Length: 431
Ligand SMILES: Cc1cc2nc3c(=O)[nH]c(=O)nc-3n(C[C@H](O)[C@H](O)[C@H](O)COP(=O)(O)O)c2cc1C
Image 1 (cartoon, protein in one colour):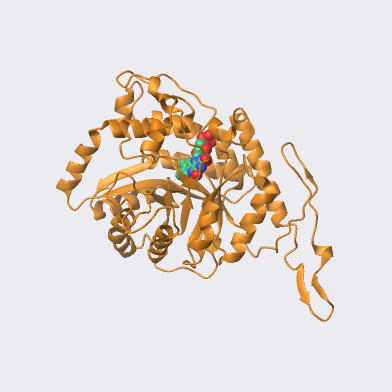
Image 2 (cartoon, helix red, strand yellow):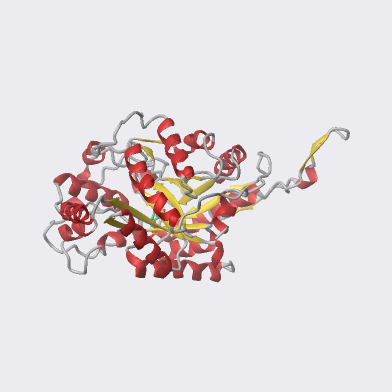
């Protein structure tokens, strides 16, 4: 049995612009689109839904936001935390995971908001803690540029520690509701945290009610420092990798980091981004593969615009038919490496784009049985915990994948057919 989730890489943003699913019966700005998607995810037995977020209108590619806005890529987008109550109101078991920036949210605000949302749910809340590598985002929060890569992770570590200590600032039995004694809560069981660290100064205690279950921490660190953070603190590590070898190496390194931090490695589930394209027959799959290799200017611009934003390097400057030079970034290191290593060393930028035409993470074009074979095989080789389907949440995409794949995965006992009563964390720990 594997855990499955869905990652919406466009966040609470435009879903399916440029595809047949765009605008079909829904307005991306309203909750109904996402509510119907999470209903489908829960009916199909997925464990979690992760909502990406970012904080800019990217203009790194060619020094203009033209491609970002023409393709509705990264912008416009709404705040995912505001969507969460709507998603909780139509689900009972599915983990709902908004993205929270450790760089730009004050920890008290994050702890309070997330605690409030968790109280609305049946223990379903998660938080995707990111460090936000973009200088453009930093410039929206009073900085000229983002702080140094590894220092960002130090800050994120302190952020998570403060948020968790705030959640624990009320002892679980602090609320007594003793009508006869006239005591709602026992003050001796509610504690200030008096935190004074390198990045934050927070007195506490939190002023929300104590949590029966803390939100599940999701993290996508991929650099050495990022993996130490994910292994040390995450309940779910999410990653981009292609094929069994890369996935196994990533999972092993996260589990090692967990052990180094004194944790049980089985307490961290490692999920890989996976984009299936379902074909009706082997011949159609061949056709689709051939079509993918034909890059349009739109594909080229979309991919390079995205990498320019994620790496803070303007990819417009590079010759498409020359080998890509060695690149480093202060932003998303693992994501840049995943891009540059899509094709063998010495490949041209065009060859890299062709090799990753299926998108970031692992992707496969095949019949449902071929896709199920692949997931079963790779899951066994990686010792794996599971996969995150990625894509828009318009009905054409969601039902195109899940309606056909779910019955096959269920028949093979790879996908759960029911949930326990223990909430998101217990669902993850169930197998
Ligand atoms: C599946 C996945 C989802 C991510 N979601 C977000 C996100 O919503 N917002 C964000 O700023 N970064 C996001 N990231 C970027 C990561 O938080 C992280 O910066 C990236 O994986 C690179 O980390 P590294 O510098 O340690 O290699 C995501 C990465 C992955 C692989």
